[in-house]
Image 1 (tube, helix red, strand yellow):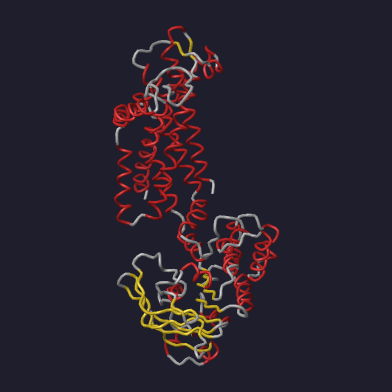
Image 2: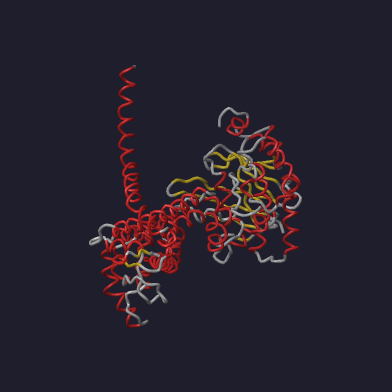
Amino acid sequence: MTDQSKISVKNLNFYYSKHQVIKNLSLEVKANEILSVFGPANSGTTTLLRTMNRMWDIIPGARMEGEVLLDGNNIYASNASTIELRRKVGIVFEIPTPLPMSIFDNVAYGPRLSGIKNKVALEEIVEKSLRMAVIWDEVKDRLHSIGSRLSGGQQQRLCIARVLALEPEVILLDRPCSGLDPVSTAKIEESLRQLKEQFTIIIVPHNVQQAGRVADRAVFLLMGDLIEEGPTAVMFANPKDKRTSDYITGRFG
Amino acid sequence: MKLKKFGERIPQSLFFLIALSALSALALITIFIFIEGVPLIAKVGFFNFIFGMKWAPSLGQYGIFPMIVGTVLVTVGAVIIGVPIALCCSIFLAEFAPRQLSMLVRPAIQLLAGIPSVVYGFWGLIFIVPAIRNYLGGPGLSILAGSIILAIMILPTVISISEVSILALPPLLKEGAFALGATHWQTIRSVLLPAAKSGILASIILGIGRAVGETMAVIMVLGNAVALPSSILDPARTLTTNIGIEMGYASGEHQQALFATGIVLLVIIMILNASAQYAIRRK
């Protein structure tokens, strides 16, 4: 196997109606790395993330060209299962939205859908997932109260936990910390570093600093074009493209 | 500066006065009904009025219990028949229907609300009543006939309010469930419906209110006998139809008794509307 990529994006073009948001983009994501995809608003970062687990299917007018491969298999092949894909590639959205049920049931929702009924097994998965998302200590005494009563930062970690409970291979994070205070952000970043051991993580950070802090590699997008990619340390210390350096140093964006 | 303030104040007080006139109409009608009705209830006795079995105005007997039972049975029947249909329809419109189809179905359902109730009643009398008489027995004019007509009449209320409450949910709720590997139907059942349940409950309560208050269509198909029905194929009388039938010739105490019936009706509707408001506000 020469191809070590977990996810390969090949010649991706993406349109909302006539408006093109991603322009002929190709990208390789390695297993067990944290990749950050950053850029100013409307650069196609969120859309790129969503093509990786087909979370744009329900958006009217959206259209995609090109291929996305997971472990070498085209996830848009006609015989590929969207449900199975989404269990392997979990996503955390910018705005945390707990399902209208208890904390426990929020985390157990995915495992239950995949057929796990055993109560003890579910309890184990829930505790493990909540611990991995660094929220167990805060909620262990109120697992059966409703998820939306938690604070914003707790809700987001709950949403991370419910994705972890699927035991996915890849986790996509779309600005997971944008509405959160620095303490909550630090907690989430801390849990990401631990999760890297087991998962491949692709994050759209909510600012440049976060891209620099958490990621092994970084990809800079601008208006749908891939401008530059490389190890985060290298890119941030010594950007090759002027637009990258302008953005990182805050000269625009 | 002073002139400007004055110019602001005139429309403000004008609107306030006009708004007040709508409110005072409500107050006036309520007070009038109570002034007319309460003395009779006091004279007959509250329990004799509500739980009395005999309605014979010529003998001075005013018991409305059979009509309360009639109202409850017809309404419960309408809910049992109408609500499942309405909920399926609203889920279909909100989640499954292609855009073009829902654009067509939605106004059609609104039109259902615009059909005059006398037309519903006439249609029921010509089609439903004979059908019940021929296939199920009894006189045809019956609680079942009333329930079927009311079930159709509450559809627009229940469908549009529950559809709106499903559509008003944040799209992220649906995406969240999809992202966890749920199918569309699993998402609807385990996420969207529970999240929209307060709105759906309110739509059902408002539908009940509509059914309780409907008069014309019900008069035409219910048979209007003042007796405790023993089956849903028996005729019955509701609180509204009692007023509708007898108001033409009632006078004196008899007329007061009809206003007293109106009080009971008003209280029931107020309770229903208040609980609908409560259901909407509770998150």
